[in-house]
Image 1 (cartoon, rainbow, N blue to C red):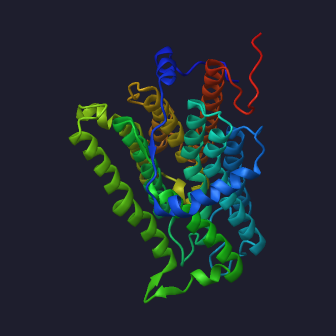
Image 2: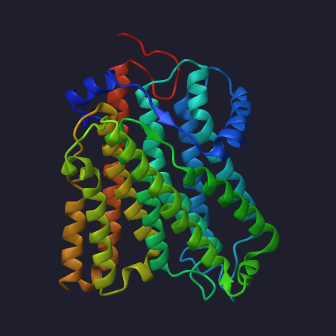
Image 3: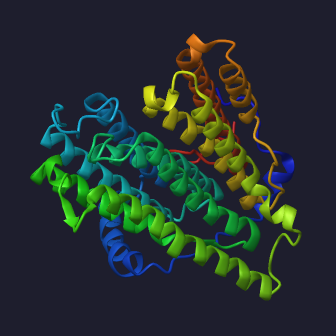
Length: 386
């Protein structure tokens, strides 16, 4: 499956020179989570590969996504007069979300503990994180849903994009400055989400119907926290870090075009998907919200992974992602009215294509870099030299 070589010879040479450089200034992370992770990592045996820890954490988020899809397929389960998600499911999702977050925090510590840190480990971690953004955002949506006390599927679509752009912003920073400034919003959101799941299991979704302050509903707090964190913390800090690199003359890309190149494909993805939503003859987002979110998140993850490869190898970012082509074709066919009754089928077909292509890309890149560094992705044992 991983036969095609996506990583060029120039990029492989760049990976050979790569040195990890990151800054974490989040008080929650520094004073609470890191001490906790330092304790947790001691539980793991020293023969356990860090990438296996990373992958297990990611699979827990995927499991949560599909578990909630079973109990809340179209996001109406939390609405009044609907069959609610069982309390034990909320407990399960809350615990697994926190475990996944913990595993994401200890994988790097396990790598340093076992002296097995490699560029592949960082790429594997951040590549899966880019896909995980969609899984945890869509899963938490079920706590409020799309009923009269929830948020609309279009608002959630916009909130998903706020999270996605917040993610890529940090890697845009590294593409231009050479330093990964870990976003504050990630740790805060993961702890908050886990708590919300557990509280929901104890008080029920009905508790979120009532306003918590004047006429301000919990759904409004949910929306305000995501947008507020992006606008008051993530974006200002990214711009400040970029400005500091500019004033110290340490920017890796000096032209405006080269500096902003990583945003071209994500912006086009957003425009195409939003265009489809507004001109959809069957109101596709209303009819298939979960599938549409999945398609958007998977295409975004592929764009992000390719950017991460470029910034880690110090090579030029690709202007356009090829996945935009089939997406544009489907949008053109659907909005032109050529196949109005096949819109859902085309969404399924497009989502399948993008998902399989992204998995193939991930497997191929991991396989190629594993051979290049002469390591096994999920084992600390060296491969045979035969």
